[in-house]
Amino acid sequence: MDQISTTSLVPDTFYGYRDDMSIQVALVWGQIKTPLIVPLLRLGVVICLTMSLMLFIERVYIGIVILFIKIFGHKPENRYKWEPMKDDVELGNSTHPMVLVQIPMYNEREVYQLSIGAACGLSWPSDRIIIQVLDDSTDPIIKDMVELECQRWASKGINIKYEIRDNRNGYKAGALKEGMKHSYVKDCDYVAIFDADFQPEPDFLCRTVPFLVHNPDLALVQARWKFVNSDECLMTRMQEMSLDYHFTVEQEVGSSTYAFFGFNGTAGVWRISALNEAGGWKDRTTVEDMDLAVRASLRGWKFVYLGSLKVKNELPSTLKAYRHQQHRWSCGPANLFRKMVMEIIKNKKVTLWKKVHVIYSFFFVRKIIAHLVTFIFYCVVLPATVLVPEVEVPKWGAVYIPSVVTILNAVGTPRSLHLMVFWILFENVMSLHRTKATFIGLLEAGRVNEWIVTEKLGDGLKAKAATKAPKKPRFRFGERLHLLELGVGSFLFFCGCYDVAFGKNHYFIYLYVQAIAFFIMGFGYVGTFVSHS
Image (tube, rainbow, N blue to C red):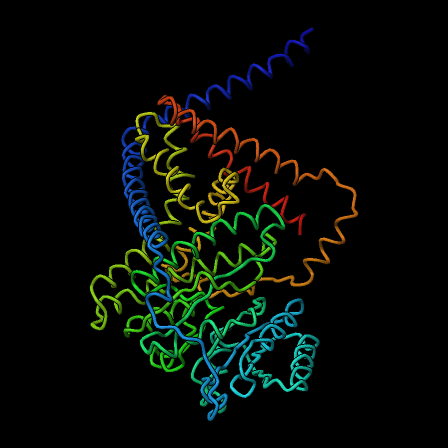
């Protein structure tokens, strides 16, 4: 009996110890909350609300502009001179300018045939076009395959050049810069650039080059991207929603109002004289395309965006590939902003209004604020206010502004409006990765120049779908987490709707579930999309 009574004391001692620890933690929390946590959290709320307003005003402004563009038909053909290229009876094909087509690639086993074949199929006089394949592949087998493909097209009468170099210095920018040094490029007036997974339609040059020929102040004609695998999985649908907004709204507004937007690095045609005047390709950041566009714009050159001209390409279909891509796309612009902000301010060739647009709208709000506010406000500060009731967040900042911004972003992809809830969760999860990359770019930290080529599947997408079709469905762990995240997302959505509709002070439920969903979504996407790949 004594032994039993002694043993029975252990749980009481344990619970007593646990109660003491809880009391101590509560005392410490009470001592630091009022003088430290509350003021810091209130400051964080003020800063985040300011950033939210900046993003909100930017979104509403460009939303109004794009509405006017659509209503009044402000098309490129109405703003710039455009006439189709015609053969002259006496001069023949010489009326067509000489065009260089560059295809940079690196170990592109799955897509090299698609891109080379599409470039060689462009409708342009064969004696007025040069296809230049810039192969930085390190795999000797792939290099041989690419070279043989070039030889095959050369045997058909295509003027195609296979170019390699001894190193990968500068990555894509280095390859493009090296490609411009060849003697035959001196005869070219324009250069079209396509990444290895891009497949332009045969009439691409016929629709773009006339803009440059008839408008000497234009430096760039940019086409829109069309995604061939947007329906492959939920992750690609989310990517499509974000990128469609960029192309449908941001690029269109920049082209129509300021004649400036960021070059997308592919599916565009440059005037070679403008490219050279801007200083050519530079590898100081991982966004060499944006770097070139900003420098050309500061020298007075204009750009035009053709939303009606679409070039097929591929979205990253694995989480790993998407994360690497987003790191480069978030880190590079922040680092370029750090390097060029003073150069933009001191420039005397462009108007003050254009400087404000480039510095504030293009760089600061879209490339920095948009990433920071999504993570810091919606995933950190707002959930923290649940634990600190002394700090209040106005409903307009917690619910109304995010709702409007979300709706405006989703307008670019009407077919995916029913996926808005999942897009919110997906963007919040990725905001952690993007915020980290943004800080790396601003501070020029260790991974600032990290460049990992995005994995592409090409024809492997069809083979992948065919091999998966006959398999018996299995309820995997990743899929269970995916269903859980959908349930949490639905609950999150209805909590927000309830709060907006009835005006109750229940938005703390919205915020708390948001925090839970953030972590569940992270594990869910890892499980689902890694197993999917």
